[in-house]
Amino acid sequence: MSNSFKSLLIFCIGGLGFVVWGCAPVISIPSSQTRWNRDIQTGEIGSAPEKPSPRAVASLQLTDQGRRLLENGNPDDAIGVFEQAINIDPTNGQNYYYLSEAWLVKENIVQAVEFNRLAAIYLEDDEEWLNQVMLQKERIIRCSR
Image (tube, rainbow, N blue to C red; front, side, top):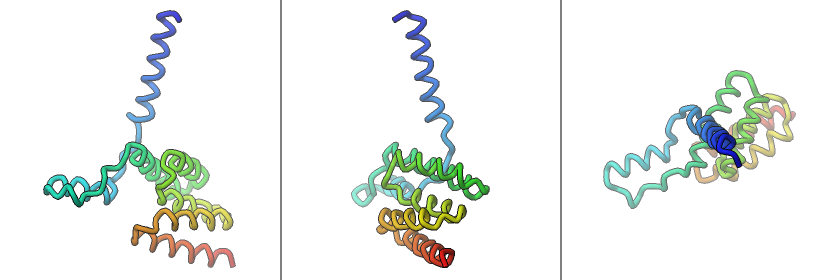
């Protein structure tokens, strides 16, 4: 392998890393991460939840990007972003919730029902989100009539 090819390869890999990690959108800190930081500062480390993994953080960043696309009337683009987020962290229930929203906007009730069902599974331990999922389910039922 020539030196110029090696240099080009290193440059491309480094550039890809910059694009993937350096240009990611900034999101608000999830409540669990806020609690983790607060508990560290107060010394109550034993009660703090684990710090989110890099995969979870990346998934949340994509969740925020997809949510903004959905809010701006781009459900097709949002669906693609939420699917990427699920590939990174399939346990992030918020992505299933927002996928259900996007399919509801596109009036695809079958897909909306399925992603709402998955959101309920992954968000069952979060009372606030589970409440949102149940309200979404009611809207889906109304739309299917």
